[in-house]
Image (tube, rainbow, N blue to C red; front, side):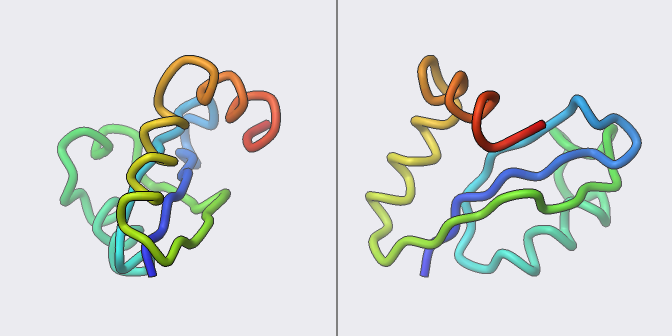
Length: 81
């Protein structure tokens, strides 16, 4: 399975990150252990949303959608507080 997820910073609740992974549990641990330079300054993170896809291309397209334009608006309106 392929996962598209949203994490939220616990210390900075207005900070969110949309990502993609085949191993969601390990990826969240990596964020909280500082293995991502992009998200390191806002750790620790908590998972607030994820969805699973069978196909790689569909998952990548959904991730891209959530990171841009109308997808970002959808995310803010329906998926995060």
